[in-house]
Length: 136
Image 1 (cartoon, helix red, strand yellow):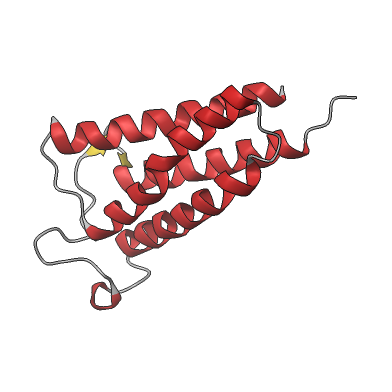
Image 2: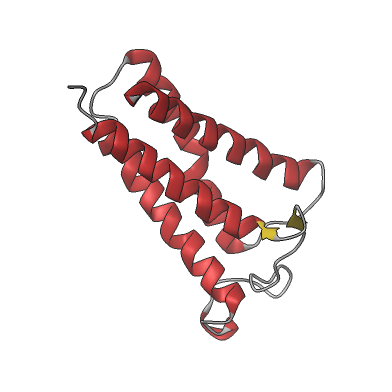
């Protein structure tokens, strides 16, 4: 079960990275500044979790969780900004690509920042579960 949680976290980071790159390269969506910050914390997770799985690292939580939680913070802020909890004037986004626009919706109801938030939550949960899971 512990290994499944790690593979799940790795797969989520890989799918999120691939989806983010596809949105930019194939669908020509320009990421906003908050999207870039989320990418900064997501992209290395593919390599870190992958190498940790390959090397059977026991303390992977210390490398993954800080990046995942920082990305989660940016994704949460981005979602709250889109929901109108925060005003546009206190954001770090530019006029060219505003952060308050949801852009295209996946399956007609999920915004890309919400998918990022969901990925960071599930990756964090998977890493925490894999670290504290003890087989009896």
